[in-house]
Every structure is written in structure tokens, then in C-alpha cells.
Image (cartoon, rainbow, N blue to C red; front, side, top):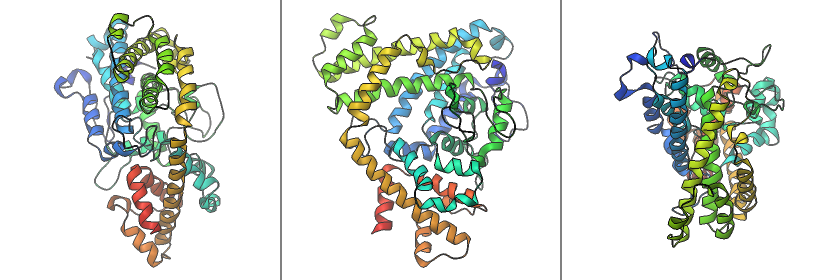
Length: 444
């Protein structure tokens, strides 16, 4: 892979080439992407979507929105630091093409901002709930009418693939979705493969999948424009990662490791003594002990240690990337950057404690159970109504249900796969609160 190709400013539908040296630096294309994402309705909906604690009313617990903003800030820092090193190593990128170190930060910041935009309500249990509606719920009846890959898209519903669809899918009058640059889409694509074949490998990019069958052709166009390396054969589509996708992943890993842990501390799910012990291991080489000793309350102490920890992990992610940059460009680095961090043992300890004390806490589990029931109910009612309408067999109840669908979700879809995915898309874009509200309406 080659950086000048990987940093493509092309957008869906372009008929002429966009050159970096001709860009207006006061309105750089990669920064336009950031703006388009932040002003989009799917991004705004993240303000009422679960990060760790579903339906939390406390003022310090993170939502998907605050998490995404923080990942974007961390991603920008990592990207700029990497960009500085890359420009120094390949001066022609600046001298001939006009790229700047901050361009890398702008790309990673935009992709990081969007990294959770396709996630359903109620956290990762929302993805599982959608999948299980089809694999073991009433949605099983559709299996024989779909191809293997279409069925896998549904039973293994994936927020990353849904996010690609949110960012790129056309609808009447809105061609190409947000029309982001291909460089930002490439950095967003952490798992550049389709849902089948589902074969466990050691390659981090094979952990999940990154696009639905309905988006396959455009996904291939983006990958080919960026020069991503194909790694599947025959009819199966898959590629090695865009190098900047490693930075987006690292930013996300850093934030959920440290900031979810901070949420658990502030909620009282993790004791401060535990927190101090775990965080100090991450910052022992950079902590200003006299300053730390002046902090008199828990929130300030944890905040100080969190900031130091994130700074250390950012610098280490940059180190790992630069040391392995040539292997990454060859598609020969099958690891997440933080898997090779010198702090990996400390990260693993924090995650293990978070799983036990936070992710498996009674409050989280009870609300995830509620989320499962709500998503299953919404899918069942709306899939039935939407398909009955297509078959001209809708009941009066179906007609009433369809009247409460948002206007943009009333579009006609010709195939069963498209209709089912369309309803999944509708449910996935609901906030936690709106999902509860819709459920109350249809079960009243």
C-alpha cells in the first residue's frame, strides 16, 4: 500500500481528481468530513445511546456521544504524531503532493468520531439482540428465502457494517450518504471483509465484518481506490486494513479501557483503592507525586491519573505503529496496536476488573435484559408490518404501525433481504429512550 493513494480525497460520485496541493487549508476535505458527521442526525442520536450504563441519568457517565467525541480527540493526537513521523520519513508526500502531518490527525479524528455511529441502542447487547431475533427468534422463518451471506448479515448483525451503511447509503435526493472522503472511510473500516466466510484467524481485521451485502459494490470501490490489499479468494471479499484504521482502533481501545473504568469508579462499582492501584501502574514513570498529593477529592485524583494514563498510551500506540509501519503497509501486521503495547499487562488487568465490576454489574445486566426484550418486540412488529405491506396483505394494525415509522424509513424495498435490513437499520438508529417509547406505543 502507498500513502499517497491511502490519503485519497475522492468522494462518492466524483468525476475529477481531488489533489491535496489544490485544497483550501481553511476548509480541508478531511475536516469537512468531521463537520458532516457531527451535524448528522445519526451522530446526534448517540447522545442517548448506551456506552456502559444503559439509561443512566447521572451527569458523569459517558454516552456513545461523549465516548465518540473523546475517541476523536485521542485519535487526532495519535494521528498527528504519526503524521509527523510519516512526513519526515516520506518527504515527497509534502513536497510533491502537499500533505501535512495534521492531515493524518484530521482523517483519524473524523473516522474516530463516526466509529460507533452504526451501533444499536442498549450497547453491544443491542447487536446481539438483533442477531438473535433472526437466529433463534421469530425471524428464523426468513432464513430459507435468503442467501447464506444475506442471512449471516442478519444473524450476526454488526455495528461496524451498519456504520458503513449509515455513512454511505443513498436515498432519494441524498446520493452517497454523507459523501465522506475515501481516506476517512478507509480509516473507519476496521474489519474490511464480508460476513462470510466466518473463519477464526489470528488477524485482528478478521475479528468481525465491515459491510453488508447491500453495500458490497461500493465497499469494493473504496478499497480499490485506496489500494487496499485483497486477502480473500474466489467470490469472497476481504482486504488488509487501511493503516490509519489501526489508529482509530487504538484510540477506541484507550478510551474504553480508561474512561469506562473511570465511569465505574464514579458510580461506586470500583473502589478508589482498586482504581489507584491499577492506574498508578500505568503512570508510575510520569506522575508528578507532589502535585498528586495536593489533590483532595476522589474525582480530581482519578481525573489526573486518567489524563496521564491516556497520554502514556497515546505515545506508546504511536511507537508501535511507527516501528511496524512497513509491515502494516505490506498487510503483514495482524495485531491491534495495543496488543503490542508495553502496557499490555496493565491494560489487561484494568479490562478484567472492568468486566467483573462494571460490565457484569447487576445494573448493567438488568437493563440489557430490558433492551433485549424491546429490540425483539420492535423487530417482530415492524418486520411483519413492512413485509405485509409489500405483499399487499397488511392488517389495520400493520397500517397503524407503518404510520409511526419516520418518513425516511417508508421507502419501498424490492427484496426480502433489503426489507429486513431496512427495519434493522431503523431500529439500530433509535436512541435508548426512543426505543423504550416505541415499545410502549406498540405494547399499550
